[in-house]
Amino acid sequence: MNKKPVRLTLSVLVCAFALGCGGSRGKEPVTAKLLEDEPKDVDLVAHLTGIDETTPVEVEQEPEQAQPVEQVPEDDPAAGEHVGGSMGVFVGTLKLVGEPIDGEITIKTADSQGTVVKEGVDSGSEVRLAPGVYDIVFTTKKLIGDPELSLRDVEITAGRKLTRDLKVPAGEITLVTPGKGCKRIAVRIKPKGATDWYPGKQYTCKPIKLLAGEYEAEYAKGKGGTLIKGIQVYDGGKRDITIRTVK
Image (cartoon, rainbow, N blue to C red; front, side, top):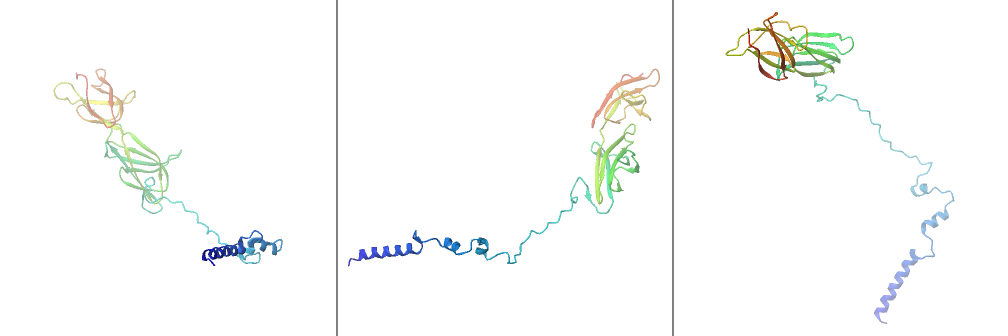
């Protein structure tokens, strides 16, 4: 017999055998046959997994996460430097043109009563306070009129040191007499439109520090006095202002 037909016959037999094991259309799939032999109310999941209602099953549950406790970060600049303890610390400094100046601080509760908690505190020094909200009032004799400046609603936190600088909006003027040299003459100063003059004596040829704003000055008091209007003081400014001829 020719070898080539033999190989073809064997191939056909192998193919027929493979079809007989699972490729025949007449034979039902194994899964379908399995379901036919089981009762009609078979639990397919229980049959396939081996788990039914009588099998004890442990279900893993997600562990409960503890609620985070809200804390102020130790490096929170808004709350201040962390120092510990149940009290807070406040440091307030008056600054004029970037430089600290002498002054005093009065601390009041930030409410309708405005109760004084501390007073006579030097500018730039530390003061311990109970946690709460305060108004900080600064005064300084470095400016004509001893003006008051305030920081409102300053919150003090337990265990924190809060540092605040208060920039004074002020400038410097010098009233200068015309002509050669500058003649030293006593003058008085008041804010524009004010009735009262600032207490104390001021002089021409000498620098005068004032809050930024518009002022009036007068020298040679009385009916013969000369009123100087329109004196403008600028924040951070420093200027000479020539006055009228001195009598």
